[in-house]
Every structure is written in structure tokens, then in C-alpha cells.
Amino acid sequence: MGEIAVWLCIVIAVAAAAAAGAAAFFLGVTHRKNQAEAAIGSAEQEAKRIVSDAIKTAEAKKKEIVLEGKDEIHRMRDDSEKELANRRKEIQHQERRILQKEESLEKKLENMERKEDQIDQKNKKAEERLKEAEAVKKSQFDMLEKISSFSVEQAKEYLLNNLESELTHEKAVKVMEYEQQTKEDCEKSAREIISLAIQRCAADHVSEAAISVVPLPNDEMKGRIIGREGRNIRAIETLTGVDLIIDDTPEAITLSSFEPVRREVARIALEKLISDGRIHPTRIEETVEKARREVDATIKAEGERAVLEVGVNGVHHELVKLLGRLRYRTSYGQNVLNHSLEVAYLAGMMASELGLDPTVAKRAGLLHDIGKALDHEIEGSHVEIGVDVARKYRESEAVVHAIAAHHGDVEAKTIIACLVQAADAISAARPGARRENLENYIKRLEKLEEVASSFEGVESCYAIQAGREIRIMVRPEVVSDEKMTLLAREICKKIEADLDYPGQIKVNMIRESRTIDYAK
Image (cartoon, rainbow, N blue to C red; front, top):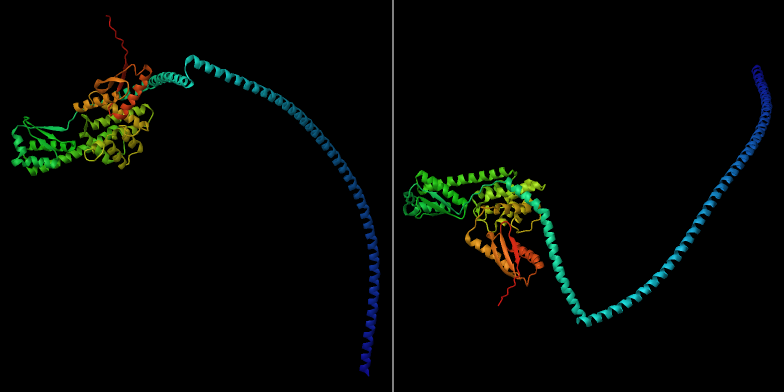
């Protein structure tokens, strides 16, 4: 019972505590509710105040913005009105200009129409006058035919003949004027250049032939050279390729060969054998070989000397040897190596005077006759051989062209080629430089006279001054004074085309009229 009472007391106490807690909670909630309601009420009032203030502020802003917008609208309206006014003024100005242009165009159009009318009237008048002129012309032609007894075709032929004679005269006069002007312009300069080159090139002249003469100490040496049954002379001729001529000439043996190098080898070998005294086939073979080596060394030395004297570099060693071979080659008695040196000097000097590269001119002049070193061994002219050799050893195209053109085989297209031609002619044409046999000389003169006689109107012609001048007599009834100039020019062109000659040939044409009568 006691425990129950205790538990009952506990339950009551708990219930009382719970009731007290619930009452306290209810009271707290009520108090908080009242506080909250009071706070909400004050918040609503504050919110209403804020909203009211905001509305008032918005209204004020609204009024301010509206006023600013109205001011901006007024300003923009004013600007637009000003711009429209300016545009309107500009459009009005342009309209006035257009109106003025239209008026001007209308006036011009009226003037053009008036001028067209005037032109039409003038054309009509011109046509009428042309018809009148044609009628007058026809009547005049008829009158002229009656007076002159010439038809229109006959009159045309007569006028054309007269015109042809007048034109022939004028043509001859023009040719003479051009020739005179050309001579006046270039003769002085050409003479100065050539004279200067010749004066600066003082070259010695050496004449050589196709034979060599070896002196003997006595006539008994001839027998020793011939040998037993002619074995010694056969050995010499076989080894050298040279013919030995042993005749009645006292104390001399003649060596004959078209090839100068072989002839020189034979000459040196024979001189060595004569000085040694031991003449037999074995000794001959040894001596000829030594002489050949000596000549080869001389050829090389002469080629190098020529290259150094001229002052050209980079020449192929085979070309140097060929230049040395020219030491033993002659052309009409003129040594070809000396001639090549002269041409090189002259071409270089003239090139310098003309402001060109003298090195190329010297090189072309030195190598222009290089083909003559091989023309006894290779078929063809020395020009063709020289061109092939120069190309083989990679000479420049300017040098190759100068070699090809130095005798006129091809047209000279460069100044260097023309200078080599001139230098070659100068070197060959100077007095005593060359000689030719009588037969070739006569043939050249006859050919020159034959060329001149082939033209119509030539009565006779004479080659004088060793072929340097051709004097031509023409028939006066066939060739007039005016046609003489043209005929002389045509003869010069044919001589240049058909003949080969050194230097130049003067064509001297003479026309003479004679009247003979007898008093009886």
C-alpha cells in the first residue's frame, strides 16, 4: 500500500507538473502571439509608409522624366526642322542648276541643228561644184587629147616616164648626199682609230716559203746524206715526211714539204746530222726524234709567248699548241702567227677606242686564223676548221662568231667581229705584208674586170693599182650622170659578193661624151 501511495504520489506529481507545463506553454504562446501581432501591425504601418513614400517619389520622377522627354522632343523637332530647311534649300539649288543645264543643252542643241543645216547646205554646194569640176575636167581632158594628140593612157605613160627620170635623178642625188654625209660623219673617226692602231702596232714582217735550204760544209756531204744505195735519204724522207732535193746547187740541200712543221723537224735533224757527221739509219732515227721533241717544245713556247704578249688568259693548252704551230705557217709569204698577233693588237686597240672590252677583241683576233694550223690535216676551209676547234675547246660565242665572220663567210653581227675583219684586212693589206704568185694575181685581176664588164652600159674597164682600183668607161648614151652613182653602187655590191680580196677596191667610173666633125 505504501508503494502504491508512493507511485500515486509520483503520478500525481507528474500530472501536476505536466499541467503546470501546459499552462506555462499556453501562456508563452499567447504572449508571443500578442508580441507578434504587435510587431506585424507596426510592420504593416511601416510598409504602408514606405509604399506611400515610394509612390510619391515615383510620381515626382515620372513628372521629371516626362518634362525631360518633352524638352528632348522639342529639341529634336527643332533640329529636324533645321535639317529639312537645309535640305530643301539644297534641293532648290540643284533644281535651279538642272534647269540652267537644260536651258544650256537646249541652246547647244539648237546651235548644232543650225550648224547641221549649214553643213548640209555646204555639202550640197560642194557636190554641185564637184560635178561642175568633173564636167570641166572632162572637157579639159577632151581638149587636151585634141591638142596633144595623146590618149589618156599615152599621157599617163608620158608622165610616168618623165617622173621616172626625175625620180632617178633625185634618187642618185639622195644616194650621193647620204654617202657624202656618211663619209663626213665616220671617215674622220675611222681614220683616227685605224691610224692610231697602226701607229701603236709596229710589227716586223717575215717572208717564208714552202721550202727550206740546208747549207752543207762541202759537196762530199751530199753522198754521205744519200748513203749506200740511198738508204740514208730514204730513212730521212720516211721518218720526216719531207722530200729532199739534192741537185747541182753547190753546198746546199733543199727540203720540200707542204707541211711546215715536218719541214722544220727535217731541217733541224739534218743540221744536227751534218754537224755530228755520223749519218746512218739508227742515228737518223734518234736525231729525228730529238728534233721532233725540240720542235714540239718550240711550238709550245711560241704559243705561250703569243698568249702572254697579247695578254689573254684561260686559253686551252691545245689551242696554245695550235698557236705555236702557226709559227711555221705562212699565207702569201706572211707569217700567220705574226699576222695573228698583229690582228689581236689592232682589234684590241680599236675596241679600246670604241669603249668596248679589248680582251675579247684580242682573243678573237689571236684565234681568228687558228684553223690554218690544221688545214693540211683536216678537210675544209681554215674558217670552218677554226670554228670547230674554238667550239671544241669551249671558246665564247663572241670569239667563235668573230672567227666565222672574219672572211665574210657569215654576216658579222657583233662589233667585235667587224673589228677582227678590219684588223685582218689592215694586217694583210699593208705594203710588203703579203705576196702572191703571178698566176693568182692575173686571175684576180681578170675576175675583177669580168665582174665590172657584166653590167649593161659598160664600154671597157681596167684593173689598176695592183687590183686596188677598177677604172670603168661607160657609154654615155646608155648610162646618164644620174645612173652612174647607182651603177657604181651595184658594181661594188657584186664585187663584194663574188670576190675575195684584202683591203678595199676603188670603183672609178668615167662617162665621156665626144663630138667629132670634119671640115672639108
